[in-house]
Image (cartoon, rainbow, N blue to C red):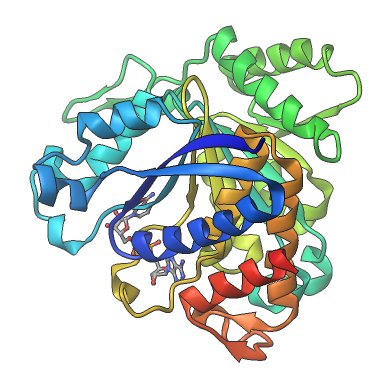
Length: 356
Ligand code: NAD
C-alpha cells in the first residue's frame, strides 16, 4: 500500500503561484515513481488572503498547516499591498505564521552546481564542489531578547539564549551532520560575549552524544572571511540568529542565483519549505521565474519531514541533470545555456528526467 502524506500548500502572491505549481508537478511524478501519495490542500496567506478574507493569515490556514505533515510555501507580498497599515500587510501574516509554527531552526543549503560555476562572483577553483548547510537559530537571540528599546539618545537590544534554546538547535545541526559529511563548525563570538561562551559550552556538551561528528568552533568575524576565502572547508555551519542571518545570506550568494536556493524552517510544529526569494512582482505572469528553488525545497521536505530520502535524491539528481543538459530559465540564460526554457518547461524537464 502506498504511503500517504498530507501536504499543506501556500502558493501566496506573485510568482509564488507559478513556482509552487511546478514543485507540485514534480511531486506528482514522485508519487508514480515511488509509490507515495500526497494529499495537497491549498491555503491562503499574504496579499491574496487579504483580498479574499481581509486577513493576511486566516485562522483556517494556521489550523490547516498545523494538521498537515509538512507545508510547501511559495512567497508573499507585492506593491498592491505595500501601502496597507502594518497589520494588513502580507509580511505581517508571514511573521505571525513563523511564530505560530515555532520554527526555531532555519536550514539553508548553499550548493554550487558545476554547470553554473561561472554564475558566481568567486573564482571557479574556490567554489567548485561547495556544499554547505547553514543551520540558523530563528526565534531567539538578539532579535527577540528583552530588554530592548529606544529613547532619543540611546538604543539597546539584548542577546539572550537559554541552554534549552541552544540545545534544541544544536541537536538539529548534529542530526543533519550525521546525514552529511559529519562535520560541524559552530560560529560564535565567545572571545567577547558571555552568551557565546554559554553557546560554546552547550554545543560541546551536546557533541558528546554524537561521537561520529567532528566539531570545530570559529569566531563569526573569521567565519565571514573564511566563507569567501575557502568555502569548501565547511559542511554544517551552526549559528545563532543574528550571525546566521548575515552568514546565510553570504553563503547563499556563493551559488550565483537567488532562483536556485531552497530553505527549510523546522521546529516545534509543522515544518515549512520555501525558496529563499520573494514574490518577484517584476516578473510575475511572464513565465520566466526559475522554479528550481521551490522544487529543491520540495526535495528538502521529502528528506527532512517525510524521511523519503530516495525520492529526495531523485529530485536533486534530476535538477542537476537538467542544468547539466544546458536547460536554463531566463535568470541563468547567459551561463552556458543550450536552451532557454519557461518556468513550466523547466518543471516538465525535471519531471521527465525523474521518470526516465
Ligand atoms: P524578490 O526575491 O522577490 O526579487 C528580487 C529579484 O530577484 C527580482 O529582480 C526578481 O525578479 C528576482 N527573482 C526572485 N526570484 C526569482 C526566481 N525564482 N527566478 C528568477 N528571478 C527571481 O525580492 P524583492 O523584489 O525585494 O521583494 C518582492 C516582494 O517579495 C516584496 O513584497 C517582499 O516583501 C516579498 N518577499 C517575500 C518573501 C517571502 O515570502 N518569504 C521573501 C522576500 C521578499
